[in-house]
Length: 389
Image (cartoon, rainbow, N blue to C red; front, side):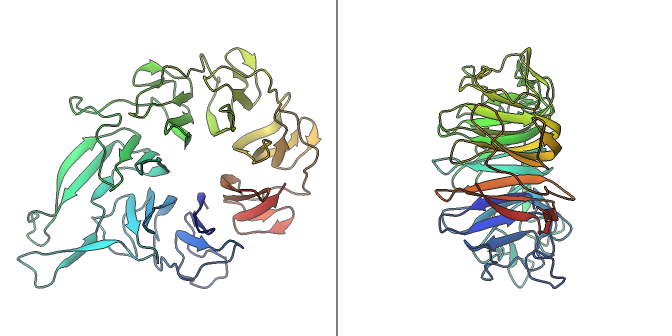
């Protein structure tokens, strides 16, 4: 599984490339997405049925009206809409496609087409909903296509054509009504659009000021130095009040924010701005290295996912056996100063995969982790596990 999100009603939505959610060997009508009750059981009122077979769902965002905005790498839904769905779609609350009827003078019956009239030329990896309802997308795309249903296509069979191609590299924003927002990191005078990053965006989150934090392998943003971690303003421009200087010396894979505005990051790096920081580092709200946090020898292996817990401690997971010389099999919890918390341990970590996403259960001292793993703590699991801390 690639992502998990909690809904306001206590349920949560998980997304991935699964075709059998519970590994039962039976068709369960949950291909690529599932909605779970608060106790983790499947909410059977939501079905994708044939769903996203042959594709991958990377993220599914609940919308205020009960629909879902779904993004990933797919070209149809329920084996329908081929040529009209490309990496993004909206679904109704029960999992049915959010569609419209389009009349054509050459057809006796109206044609059913996706209501969302946007397509992306490459996968969308993550979505973030702002406080005003706008949605920011990050991914590998370079072009966005806007459709209209106002005229006949070349084959004379459908009342729909591509009318616009916009160059939006790796980051785009949708208005509350899910139309494309061309005020965000966009310049129609540039033939290939603003360059945005010169590498990959591996992680992102939206802070309380609706500013997008991004991290990855990039070293510039729109031609300005931005060493693998950057903050954007509300129009998608680089926020000059935040800078990590020379920053981490290798890729950043995961970032999260503490309540006081500080930022924790993990990845392949061993040094940050000239100081030794092995695979985990803390930054101030303006990007400076926070010297009060030091993970020491850190993990013997790779730290792939980082999450700030409700109690202020920090969960890290990845491929490692030892952390700060203590036996920790793929998961550890750190104190706010970077030292290992000895109050949490497990007998066996994640097997046959790793954590890709997580969500804290507020006020319950619990966190749900999802990923590609099949075992945790020497017990079989299906890519999802809840931990108490």
